Amino acid sequence: DASAGAGGGRSVTGTGGSLARFTIAKDHLYVINDFSLFIFDVTKAEKPRKTQEFYVEWGIETIFPYGDNLFIGAQNGMHIYSISEPSSPYYLSAFRHATACDPVFVNGDIAYVTLRDGRACESFSNQLDVIDVSDLKSPKLLKSFEMDNPHGLSVRNERLYLCEGDQGLKIFDESEPTEVGDKLKKHLDDIHAVDVIALGDELLLVIGAEGLHQFDISDRDNPVELSVIVPVRIVE
Picture 1 (cartoon, helix red, strand yellow):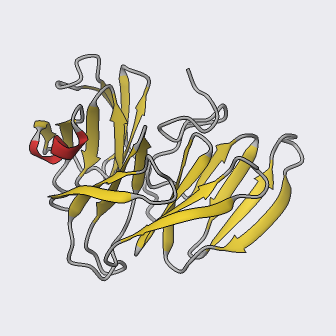
Picture 2: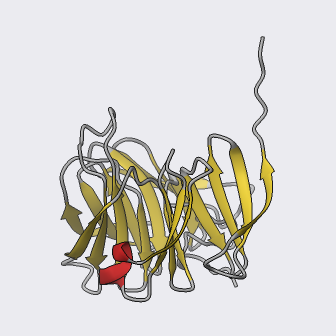
Picture 3: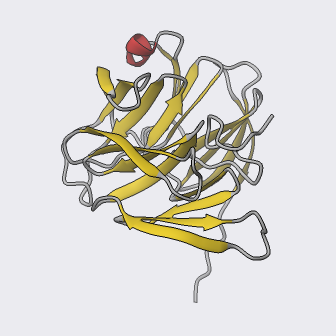
């Protein structure tokens, strides 16, 4: 059921998490560094062709495709660019917030943005922002919820999966976005979680310090761990 530019950072080539710094949509590869967006035409995969490069803003961190748009998370806000012309993205709007690390996940007319503190982010905020993006040229904050140390996030089947670093993975009822932070359904506090990807209705991938965890989410409020791939550490 993957389609280019669909929700969840999905494309015919792969699926990205909310902390991704590159993504593929509409036969184009979009890559960010700390301040610029690079666009490559990958219609011919064996011969990728750079079509454009332009400055976005200092401190950009994440990129998330949804429909005909890119949502770029920066340390001081979320930038929205149209990719209706895939080789030539153009600016639509930005939602500003205090300086903080900033993953983004979009689901329909709602964007979820996590802000967290940390040395690189120079912030004391740890929160989940719920933003109305029904008007892409005028995004509006609907609600903020206090969190512990939120990182990556994903949404599937009215459940929001939120990584909280050392605090683990939290699962919220997302059926009413303006109440999501008050509807905790499950807290897996025995894993370290940095980013999460929901693949279809039955599989959840969680990456953290211990490795890559795979969970069966057939029962969306009671995930069952299937496996963990532990990273190899080479000691010289």
